[in-house]
Image (cartoon, rainbow, N blue to C red):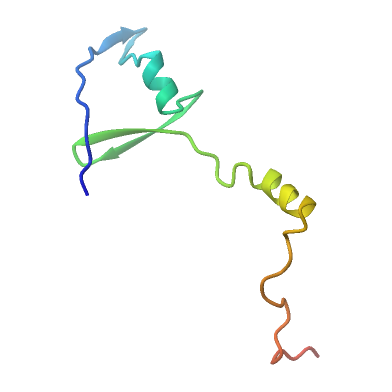
Length: 85
């Protein structure tokens, strides 16, 4: 598997009493950066990822499945060998 990288040089700029980098609107839109991002420190790299919400959109998908009668159980919720006492 071949992964293509693009290398860009961007300046570190003062932001108040801190330092930061500025990302172009094109990069923000291409990688879906909105509001907050995830910053991952890995060995000698910094990885920036769009912040993801776990199970985002699941409620809408379940509602859609129900409306399409596509939410039937795939396996029984009670097995033949279960004993209820």
